[in-house]
Length: 400
Image (cartoon, rainbow, N blue to C red; front, side):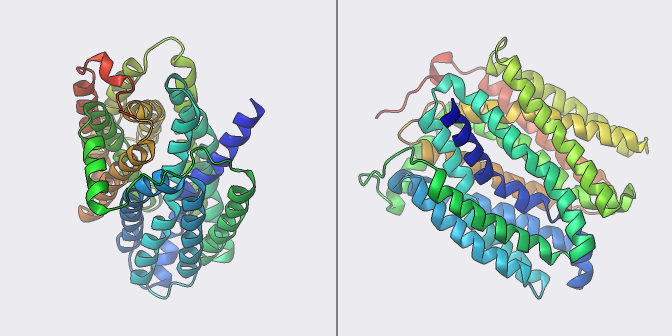
């Protein structure tokens, strides 16, 4: 049990680099825009570029970690992240920052792929939803701490200090990976890295009906969260009038909703099936964001927006662990590729949703909330289709 807790702490530190990279610099958007002589929607494109980098990077790392094991790709990716973080801290223009955020994502996203694969390597299928929920508790601290730290660094030391912090954090995690992370799967020389074979592998994974529907369900649901992340700096600070510090606290409170849902999910799983929980949570999320859209369109109270967004993230805490676990359930030997494709789908769809928020920018909250409603509706539809699949498909069906 002690080894399990230590492993989860290490994995939590690895995956936390993603929310730190996404959330910590959000309060600095106005300062970045002023310093680089641009506007907030243009700065937000650095968030979109990060999501694109994560999506593409995970596709690359999937077969790599199946071929070389989990640790060596982690060291390579975090080393690349280290270089990119330094470059972001020195960015002379917003275009350079946008480009370096792609490189930052290409390095850091290896942690997302490897961590999910390590969980699939280490724990039995029935335990994976609870493990993912516990892992979300550990990594969930990052979205609470990150914007608060980012607001402090921006106001006291300037926005560039945020990327200095990320540089130091990456160095720390490289040491932890080297010393404290066990290898969960040995390198497999039989795994081909030829593009044609990789494409065939991904095709096999994608067309498994359980993987496809549950990955789409989780990806669309998460894309609503990415729309919130992209739109909230303008909505919360410019429309609702929060300061950068207040925004950090508001973001942290919303992150607590996500964490609360994921932890309550661990208890609810003792009584209900993963499929039932996912349907109830998805339906509730759709109702929550639709209510927020109604409030925005009718000029309702700001408190309603805060509460509705918090509820949407609360239900996200139920959806993410269960859809992720179900999408990976049919795979063992291909766990790395399945993990990579699932994560890539989520990030590329998330990148599109965050871009839509910037594309439809009209100085109101409608673009952010509208994309959140569309995302929740598509997620709900995918879950409805997944529930019609025969139960035996959820069992491990991959040929060793």
